[in-house]
Image 1: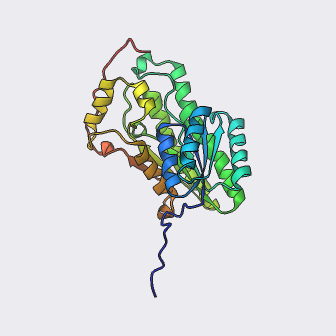
Image 2 (image 1 turned 45 degrees about the vertical axis):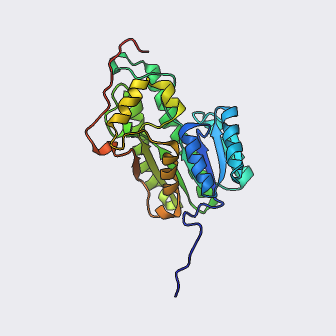
Image 3 (image 1 turned 180 degrees about the vertical axis):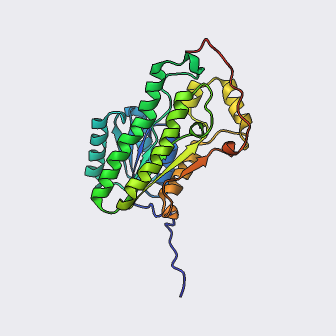
Length: 274
């Protein structure tokens, strides 16, 4: 008996995928890889122009896209975002929680960090992941066909995060939340995994860090460079695909080997930063 061949090894063609923070950077890279895999995309961002641009670009590749504007740190906005996705596509197969970062705050030593820095990190990274995962889980459970949730954490959540303590703490929380969600959602046929990249080659990184800090990160990485946004997208697509159908509760490091080396970028102490 011959082996049945399929042109859709990933099993993502026609699947409905929602990506938050899709207006640029990692979110755009994730969305682009799903579009290449044949998925239909609900793209969410707080910036109307950015998410509209990405939706248009991916539509030109042949993907069906739905641009949505929502603040995913607001529970009502998350519910509305999901309602509009379901009204348009009829279902949700994959939800990607990509919103993160640390707001307008720059890296500073713990003794100089403000409560606002912590509030921003908790809200943008951990609260947003919880609110969205809760909404995805309910929709997928009600749909009765299971689904996949992929959260985005960071190398900072696994290793010491010098001058970025709140960011590292909440990204560790995302990894832990992923495990809990995987166990609670498994009876509904919902897999939940996490991808933890190192610093992304993205506009937000270059807006946050000085050029010498970026070079330090490149030099400390075993592969000698930052993570490209579409490389992050590839890792997310893998976990969302049928190739990972028996994988749940895991964190995939997409870090160029940084987590398995003792080399770390040299962080300059600058007490004048805010």
